[in-house]
Image (cartoon, rainbow, N blue to C red; front, side):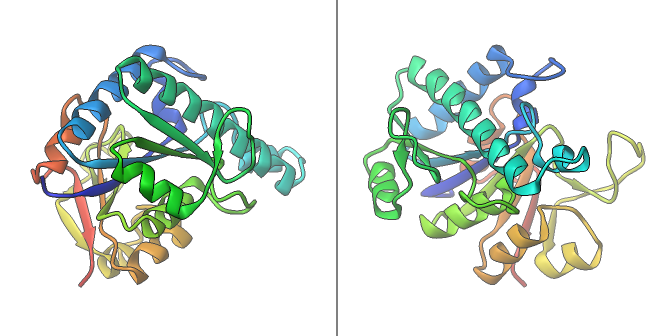
Amino acid sequence: MQYKRVLLKLSGESLMGKKDYGIDQDMVAQYAEDIKAVAKSGVEVAIVIGGGNIYRGLEAEKGGMDRVQADYMGMLATVINSMALQDALENTGMKTRLLSAINMEQICEPFIRRRAIRHLEKGRIVIFGAGTGNPYFTTDTAASLRAIEIEADVVLKGTRVDGIYTADPEIVKDAVRFDNLTYTEAYEKGLKVMDMTAFTLCQENKLPIIVFDMNKKGNFMKITQGELIGTLVHAE
């Protein structure tokens, strides 16, 4: 295996599958099978999921809602998505733990760094819910922060696009894909890999990022085996 411990970042929208909102159980089941295969190969897997398929704090703020209130609602949406993925993973026979940045004793454990690492060492798939537990921070930032805390080897950002392009390939048909970039190149080109806080955390800690198409079955496994899939963002 190329990596011993990885953090997989999934967007909330990725769970919609072919739906316009909410959770597509078929898509969640496909993700669960892909994640199970990687975990069974010996790679320690941690996951952070967004909540955009259920609720977006930034959009609610534009409609007049208090930003802090809206962000907390968004954090709860990430917990719903985390619970859905947890259930799908356990249906495949995998052991999981859901750790939340907001205390919800009835449904998940509180986030404690040493406990999270111990779960990973025991072969459990760890899902981090509720972002960082603070408003004004995205789940991209939560993914970078948790990856650093658990000493992950890489952040794998699973999207529906197969890497980083010069422009949105779903809009600009002649957009060019990058195989790899340094943090400086990505910044200077104005490429939106992650939000700036998340990106800076990775850069300062020399934590590589790989953006890849998670919807293509088997891609997650191929990356952990060292295949060049998607776009790698790395130190100088």
